[in-house]
Length: 292
Image 1 (cartoon, rainbow, N blue to C red):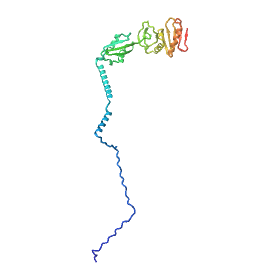
Image 2 (image 1 turned 90 degrees about the vertical axis):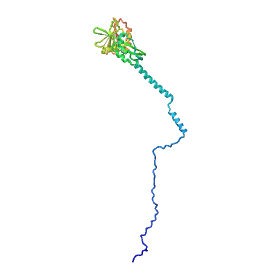
Image 3 (image 1 turned 180 degrees about the horizontal axis):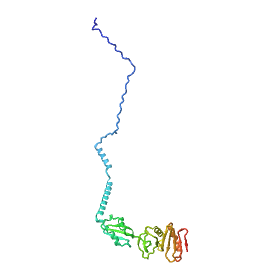
Image 4 (image 1 turned 135 degrees about the vertical axis):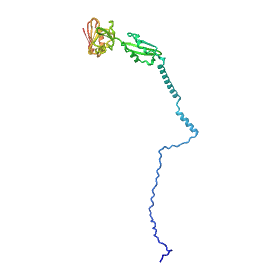
């Protein structure tokens, strides 16, 4: 038996949705805010008048003051003028030497000094130094020091200080004059009232000469001419003999307390007549003695 075509077809029943009291889960959507690291600058539009006022204000603060501008220009002008002056004096004959004047010379002939300095003629004064002149005059042993003075526009003035003899040293039977540094200044004439230093060897290298000079420089100037000779056998044994027939002797001792020894010796000499032979011992100035 054939099934009827109009017979309804049966299908599986659709299950009903279960009723539930749970609400559906909804995940919240969180949007991250964008944070800008750039500073926020609000542009404010200015009208034409305000912009002109702003520009005038900016120029007022940035504009260089007239006083500062004048000062800067003055400094620059002075520097340029100085450079031009220096260049003109060094490379033009404006300050060229045309005259050399030598003063203070007595033992050294001026002609020899002028001949040694002739190379400075027509040379600009600013280019001449005292050291250069001293080097050119170093060959004259009688000259102790010099001073150079430029007298514009064309004069070079050289002041000479000659060495002064302080003692006599006999070498090979000839008496020579020497200064404190041991420089030989010439032959003694015999009229000089200077002490004779008894030493052997060259005064420039002799320790005994230096020790004797130290004692002579400590003596009063009035007493220097009264000493006939001085001898320094050692630094602790310095003796002197005065001029005159009495042949008075001074025992000085070592170089210590030179000023005190000099004052004590002056008092002892005033109290002792020069005709009386005596020995003055000031080696210990606190307890001096006079031996007759």
